[in-house]
Image (cartoon, rainbow, N blue to C red; front, side):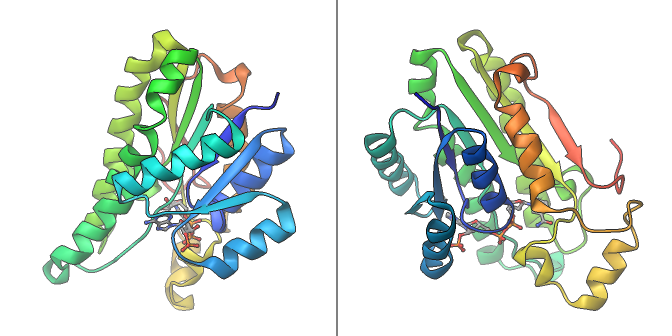
Length: 240
Ligand code: NDP
């Protein structure tokens, strides 16, 4: 029987590439989304991957959604906590709402996604967790105090879970993508985008599939000794 993988924010952008790559690698995939029903329906139509709608920032919603996925597809073996948002503003203009929304989705959302599946993984003595962090969690970013804080926090989650899950054959790793050509980055004004590309030694944005292939490796049996790591995939823009 194929392993079951849950990808939050799996219907668009990097998440969609991850869902598709996992399906192609033989996993049964559940892709979640927040509210864009049209994109999710189109994704299911083109890929055959089942989509589920819930807000990762809400614990009860996440728990109920995950229970439904497990009822439909079986116990979840692989979790990719990918859903994320930006609400950029220079710090002196950042509102508490902008802070709370980003913390809710990008940090609490990761807790809410992993916590309900953790007991089952421990019981079955197998689990693979990948959290999609960001280059800006490693280096900080102008106008992204909220976002950078959550993405740095995600690395703390992964490093702690790696230690707690190791004996139960659960690995937890993070990927820090640099700038990837998705709606999130294409929403940035072209002039700003050009200046970002100019800072990337590779001379281009990354492709969602380049992140997806790293996920497929991290969740494989071959990667069992890679635990608590951060994979940096940023075209040499920021070297750690
Ligand atoms: P997109 O904006 O293209 O897609 C985001 C996905 O997350 C969508 O499926 C969206 O659902 C879902 N989502 C957003 N908020 C919630 C929520 N509260 N509950 C459930 N689902 C939610 O993002 P990207 O593909 O660009 O980014 C994916 C991840 O990669 C994020 O964590 C981001 O921070 C990270 N990242 C992205 C980089 C980039 O350059 N693009 C660089 C570094 C990191 P819906 O379709 O319903 O809106």
